[in-house]
Length: 192
Image 1 (tube, one colour):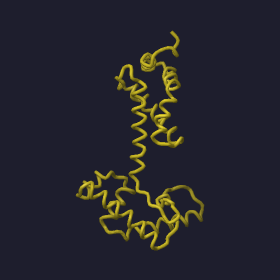
Image 2 (cartoon, rainbow, N blue to C red):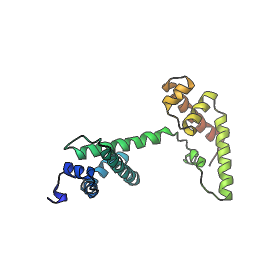
Image 3 (cartoon, rainbow, N blue to C red):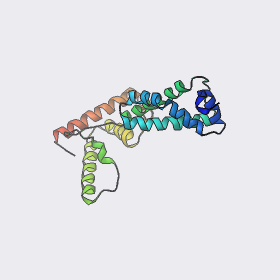
Image 4 (tube, rainbow, N blue to C red):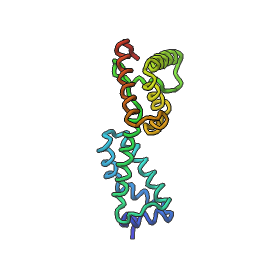
């Protein structure tokens, strides 16, 4: 029997046994459905392509560890992994607060590090200092949550434990920190 006439389960078994061509056949057989499922969640072709690749990296990893047990449901299993990764993408994106200045630019983008020229370095340093000074003007509890969340990359659960408060309190403080930063940016007519 030709490989392209084999069932998904047969191709999975052959792949696990060491035939890497079988994974390529599985990917080619189902890429349209999987990509469409991802793109329906993220609605961005570039992100969908990244998540598609990430999906098959995860599928390969799980197959190699022998963690695939859903005989006869390969495509459903892969689509579930893909959708979970797409949803995780948004969870990660939502973790970082986004604060826009008067020209609708994310002020935290100025905190990224690269190899800028002298003028860019000066401008970036000015923007970093401006943001730091605004953050220092926040009430202590809000400033602490913002720093732990954005710069410390801690989850709200970790922040709540560290600050000895509830998750809802941590979320509320973050919300007020963002609102207050926006107000300060608008009041001082700061543009980045």
